[in-house]
Length: 277
Image 1 (cartoon, rainbow, N blue to C red):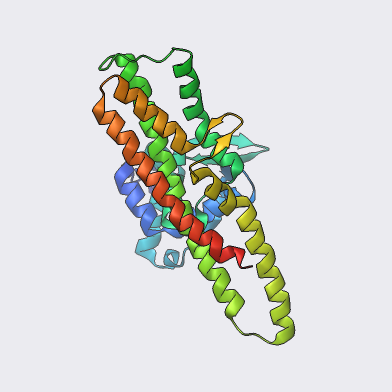
Image 2: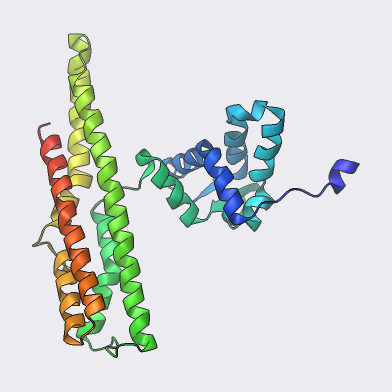
């Protein structure tokens, strides 16, 4: 009857994101699902479960808005979803990685780890540019389209990397505080021994996988099989830009250099706190 012909309310991209932030637990659940299952998609029925689990869904007016916002068609047209396909008879949906990134920022525990592999991947495009420069393949004609293209790429990669490292340091600082609190909480002796063992295991794993690689990465003398560490690369790019009188980009490289070096201090501090365990 009439409900079929009713036009479904749709929201624009900005409006949808604002409402997703209000009901952010749904996306936090989606991200946890993707992380646990090591996947970039989620079955639609799982997703619907998260939406209906919202406490607010019991209030009639709110429920209406909730269902309108999280409606698959609305999420597709507002560019929140990038894809929907059938897999083994189930509908599977994929979220826009930029949206997922935004929600990871809102919840420290969901920030993606920067282990050795992730740091290498983050450096790959930068090493590729160094290689192109060495082979004389990068335009050094200031103001030309080609020059603008590769320098824009470089700046994007560097900003991205700084952002990821900063949020990782926040996450590790939180973890470090939690570990200390757990270690100091007094429970009965037997339980405490078990707990201490568990904390020790977790602490040493975080140290090995996430803290040590970052300490090395941000160190002045980091060198990898594929190329120099980030600080050396920045020094090199700064000198390239200086040599062609692009003082704006040369200064920018030195600013980045300072930022990366500054991040070495807090990560070193976390390393010292955690290494107690």
